[in-house]
Length: 351
Image (tube, rainbow, N blue to C red):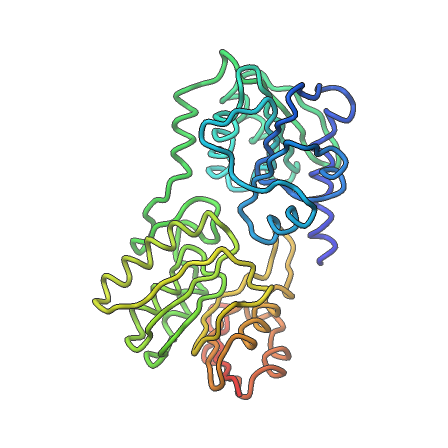
């Protein structure tokens, strides 16, 4: 599965550079280029030059770019580029917000260049860019659609503002703040809801939520466990951090108790910097469209390393995921608390 997950982005990245490689699109004279949702790979290393700025909000991918000596960061609000590259996400509101962001960072006459797999809404994405900027040119490669447009008089200013607003956090079911593109962004995830319903009220001390998303599980820990003193949220997607901070501030305020909260942009698979009395998690098990159960196993390993003696892991997962062997190898006690609606809730206690 890992090879499948790696190959699809590599092909998309290769397709993105096709118009530049063939001369269909000229390199800008100005070397300053912005790459939104950039990914490392051989095509990037072949074409990138000094002056490129790579933006990536998913921590593992950002770390890969930094290890490849790319400049990784966020452009200044008023910074403009002659060329903006973009690998848009599958979620359409998030993608439209990124199209608007790309347009805002274009100089007059600047070009935005996009690649989308055919199976992930390439035609719709191409139509959206045409609505925003005007006429679009396109090519195809690796079952991807590569298309580009120029900033100019055809840019729809009203639509630009409307799509920029799609990035703002918004209220969803349960009163939580979230934003399009996050995991289960517009609802309380059923698995997380099941774990929250079975959380014991005697969790205490320092607690961590691994893969915290917009903060639902951590907020439930604050509400249900009066003996906790602090909670740390670890989340790899930077776009989740702002909603998580607000949701946790509201949860602490509603609890009427002092609970220290820290929200970390962090790749959980690389370990944690602190030790904890308890950890809760609904770990990811896929990247893109490919199942990667080794992600969940890596979360379990990280939790085992970060728990104090006697510390407790409360975990929820799809019933078919093969986590039991990893749990048994790292924890003194493992019990299945609930099996419901295709999910399992597990408690594991560190020796």
